[in-house]
Image 1 (cartoon, rainbow, N blue to C red):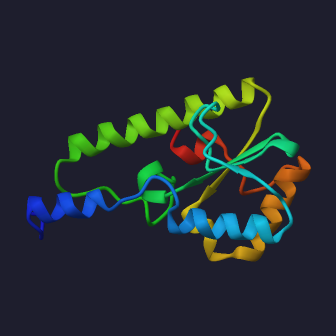
Image 2 (cartoon, rainbow, N blue to C red):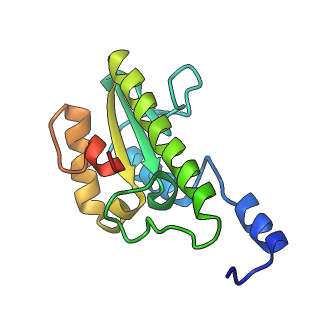
Amino acid sequence: MDRITPAQRSANMARVRGKDTGPEMVVRRLVHRMGYRYRLHRKNLPGKPDLVLPRHKLVIFVHGCFWHRHAGCSRSTMPQTRADFWEAKFAATVERDRAQIAALKIAGWRVQVIWECDLRDLGRLEKSIRHAVEGMPDALRYSPAEAGA
């Protein structure tokens, strides 16, 4: 049973942002402090990546663990009400993410997905970003298995 009314739930969900989220702002500040320059939400790229580093042919997505279903993460919980609705919604999100990443790779872009929970260790995240910019493999890079493949 839901503890809040449908109107309260609707108001909460209306406040969920798609751009300029807290985690995205942390990543932006970190990338800028590292000396890399980027563009935001380029509409001409699949998925409108959160950060685009054109000089390095790298795009960065900052994914919320809940919304994008970070496999094995404690933040990737399932709502208790309307389970069928949420399962379909999450499955569509994961599939859309995969399709966008595949399209970016086909277009010659390198893709890094940063999960919300990765922000707990900014030193490790900085290393991961540096490796992605330099084209080195790294443990925090996206893999389809992470998205619940």
